[in-house]
Picture: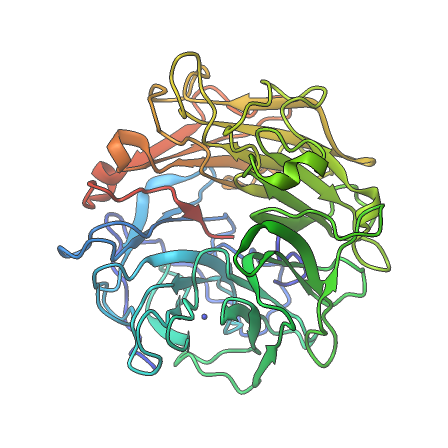
Length: 493
């Protein structure tokens, strides 16, 4: 499983957030600290995973770039668009107010922060100006889960001027000190980790204290994920970074978790002893089923000097780094791109293979699979229409054998491939209908001239897109402003 599978940011009044259409059905409220198995993304406690998708560029109340997050709830039949919510900073009890370029939804993650048995939605507002921090300090806030869905909210953390706290890729949740409570991990100064130790109270405060993990170099964190890469039972945090302004100097690092919190980071090194070339995004999950979470890195950007000594760089690549008792083993890394055996298509500059990577078991064989987006993929004469590829996990790791591609030209996929749709800019894997197979969701923020659109496909043991198993929605259904919304920019994990 992906991300935090071991149990994985000024106060505001709590009030009910109304659904756009049908309210959530009521469910019994589990007792705090319940040992019943819970889903980290089940906001209303009905046993089905829910989907949260961001449109941080959207216009809200006339403010361009204020941003919104759409939530569609799972059911026995998959995602149910009649039970949905649209959350903005104008929603009752969500902290703040819509302002130009706030980017509400710039990062999303999920976890039960207050241990009431319901998953909560954590939202980054990466360009928010705050009274405490100043211009573009950013903030992280929570919308609480409950039997009627997401209700009420609170601020969890604010940054300093130009921190961009809660910005894209700089937000994850996990129990990094092993005390049984979820901790919030974000980034300040673009390179220092800031950890807020849970559990959290309904006013957003925590009694667990805070940890700042300093970086000795002027790095830039590009993406964060959490999982147990060394098998000690305590969540670790991994990141892909680049060195200062040298965008091409990318690396993969991880911070081991422990009873005192996160330790200083360790750089993943390859077979030549040098640091392993990283990418722009990553996810964690036990692909080979050996009990250690592995790191999967997407390196979508090609055309730089480092391509000369980087395997499978053309058109973008996905790298599998197995975990182990001593941490991730970069010497055993496997690199895949569209020229790898079994992977559909061919590697071409600018395809963006590896733009987003997510991990879950889509075919039910017990080994998590990896889905990745190729928003720059040309389909025939249509440039940058986009595609999504599912790579299979096995006992030997990640393989291109049997990989499957989905585009808007695939049978049973609504819509048609158009120029700059960027289908696959964001991807997601989660079991929305409880059948044990992770369903694929894909965002195309360029669809309809930048309005954006989202698809969710019901998975089967041998197929990614099942007939009559597709849910698709956009701004018309949501009742949101379409112009420049770029719905489908990112999903919550």
